[in-house]
Length: 103
Image (cartoon, rainbow, N blue to C red; front, side):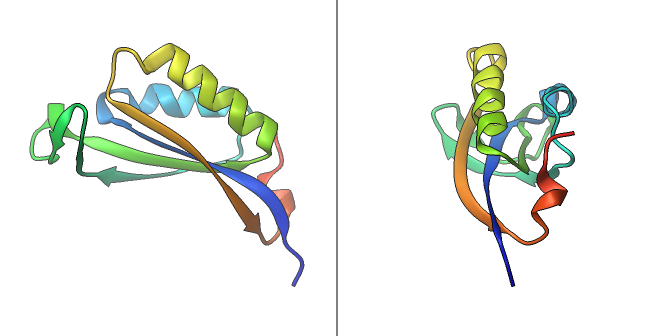
């Protein structure tokens, strides 16, 4: 079965700005995303998710490399200084590559 190379952009961020992050992804041309609650520990302490100000989400989208890098930089520039945020890119091979082309 043929596969297509893409980038997966993963963002772990405070849930307070989830809608803003999603809006940035949509304006950047991605076709979809997945968002799930996340818990963990890092520079901003323990994020247990047991109250609204302690909730984090993990948002992932798959797109072409150029779009992924541009979005990652835009998100970090706009939100990275003021919110607990970690962003990373991963190489992935997808089936039905046309599903992940820019809008």
